[in-house]
Amino acid sequence: MGTVEPQVSTARDVQQHPSMTTDAQSQVTDGFHLVIDALKLNGIDTIFGLPGIPITDFTRMAQAAGMRVISFRHEQNAGNAAAIAGFLTQKPGICLTVSAPGFLNGLTALANATTNCFPMILISGSSEREIVDLQQGDYEEMDQLAIAKPLCKAAFRVLHAEDIGVGIARAIRAAVSGRPGGVYLDLPGKLFAQTLDVEAGRKSLIKVVDPAPRQIPAQDAVQRALELLKSAKRPLIVLGKGAAYAQADADILALVERTGIPYLPMSMAKGLLPDTHEQSAAAARSYVLPEADVVMLVGARLNWLLSHGKGKTWGGKGHKDWGGQKFIQIDISPQEADSNVRIDAPLVGDIGSCVSALLAGIGASWPKPPAEWLSAVTERKNKNIAKMAETLAKNPVPMNFHSALAVVRDIIKANPDACLVNEGANALDFTRSIVDMYKPRKRLDVGTWGVMGIGMGFCVAAAVVSGQQVIAIEGDSAFGFSGMEVETICRYNLPVCVVVFNNNGIYRGTDVNPAGGPDVAPTVFVKGARYDKLMEAFGGVGVHATTPAELRSTMEEAIRSRKPTLINAVIDETAGTESGRITSLNPSAKKK
Ligand SMILES: Cc1ncc(C[n+]2csc(CCOP(=O)(O)OP(=O)(O)O)c2C)c(N)n1
Ligand SMILES: [Mg+2]
Image 1 (cartoon, rainbow, N blue to C red):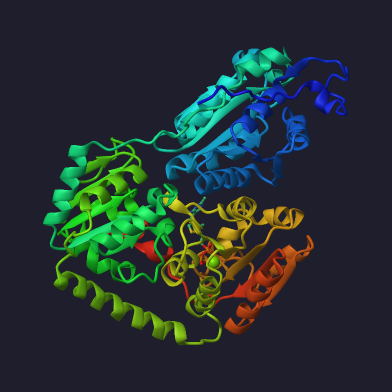
Image 2: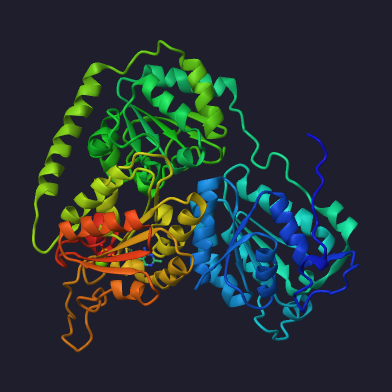
C-alpha cells in the first residue's frame, strides 16, 4: 500500500459559519473538521442523526463538506437507519445524537445492532467531563461512555483533537472486524472547538487499511467439516443473516448447488438464493429440522429463532432434549460453537473464506444426498406449497393477511430489486412465509430480538443506500413505533411505499376490557384508524385500501411514481393470532 495523504479541510472552508474562525489565512483546523475528514477519509459519506447541542454545527459542516446528512425525528430511527446501512454496505453506519436523552434514544438501536451483528457507530456529543464526573448537574449530564459499554461491542471517548484520527479508526475497526457490531464513540462538546495546526491535523488522521481482514479457516477444520458432511444421509444447510452480510453470494449459491443439499434460509437470508429455488426447504421446515442428521449452519446462530438447536423442533423428546443431529457451524466467532448444543465441526473464519475453502474441497464430483431424502423433502414441500396456494387464492371480505400478502408476493416478484422492510407479529410472520425474495439482502426485518420500531429507519436507510424502491409491510402497532418518520421520507422524497396492515391493534382488534370499564383492552387501538392521512399531512400519497385489487393497483402506482406512499390496508381484525407464530413464548401458554 502506498502512503495515504489525507485531505484536511481548514476552518476557512466553512468561514461562512459564525462559530468558525473567519480568518481567510487561517491554517488551523478544528475538532468538527477532523471528525468529518476522518470519516470521509474512510469512505463514510452519510450520517443519520438528529441535531442539537453540541452537534448542530457538526451536522451543518458535514453537509457543507459534501456528506449526506439525513436528519430524523427521533434518534432511535436514525440509529436503526445507521444499523441497516451497515448491514447493507459492510461499512459502519453512523448515527449522530446529542447528549443524555438523545444518546439514550440512540442506544436501543446500538444495542439492537450489536445483537444483530450490524456494524454501526453511535457518535454522541457529551457534556463537560469535569462537571459530569463530579455530578455537578451539567446540561444533559450523563456518563454516557459507562452506560454504553455493556450494550455494544466497544466504546471509546476522544478528549483531544489530535486523537480524533485514532478514535475514528478504532471505532471503524471495532464495528466491522470479526463479528460486526455496534460501537459507541463519545465526543465531548469541548472537543469540537479544539483547534490544531492543519498539517498536524492531517498527519493525525488514519485511513484504516483492511478494516475487516479475512479470517481464513484452518485446513484441518475444513477437512473435518467436509468429512462430516460427506457422511450425512439427510444433510441440511441453514443460511443465516451472517451469510447474507458476507456478500459471498456466488460462492454460497455454488456451495448449495454443488452439494445438492436442501437449505433453509433464516428470515434475512431469504433471497440469498431465490426462494423459488428447487433446493429450498423453507416450506418443509418442520419436517427437515427434526429429520436432518447433519446440519451445516452458515452464519446462523442456534438461538431462540432455531429453538436453540434442541427440543421438539429438532426431534428431541422434551423441550430441552437434543435431537441427535450433528452440526457443522461456520461462524467468524470462535466462541459461538457449543453455545446451545454440541458442534461437531466448528469452522471458524469469515463466511466468504470458509465457503470458498469448502468449495475447493468439494470439487466437481461431490455425491448428491441420498435420493430418498431429497424426494421426502420435496414431497412435504410441494404439499405445503399447494395448501398455501389454496389459502392465497381465496378472496375473503374483509381482506385478511393471506389475501393481502398474495398481492405483495406478486409485487415483489415483479420488482425483485425492491427492498422489503417488515415488522409486526402476524404482519411479520405471514409476510416472511408468503412473500418470496429473489435477491440477497432485500429482506430487512426485526432480526434477533423481534424488535418493533425498525420500520421507518430501515426504510429511509435502504432507500438512501440502495436508491431502489422500498416496500414496508408494517403491522399497525409496529408502524406506530417509528411512524413520525413518514415526514422524513417525504422530506427527502424517498421511493418508499409503506403498507400498514391495519387490524385495529396488537395481534388482533377484538380484545375486550375484562373489567368492562370505559378503557379499551390493552391490545386494541382506535378502530378504523386512517394511517394514510399521516402521509398526506406531509405531501406524500395516502391511500385507503380495503380489497386486494385496490392494494395491488395502489402499490403498482407507488412503484411507478416512486412517490412516498402510505397505504392503509384494512385487514380483518379477527384474523391474527396472539404473538403471531410465537404464541407459545407467552408465559400463560406455558402454564401447566
Ligand atoms: C420494542 C418492542 N416493544 C414491544 C414488543 C412486543 N410486540 C411484539 S409484536 C408487537 C406488535 C404486534 O402488532 P402489529 O404490529 O399490529 O402486528 P399484527 O400482529 O397485528 O399484524 C408488539 C407490541 C416488541 N417486540 N418490541
Ligand atoms: Mg396489528
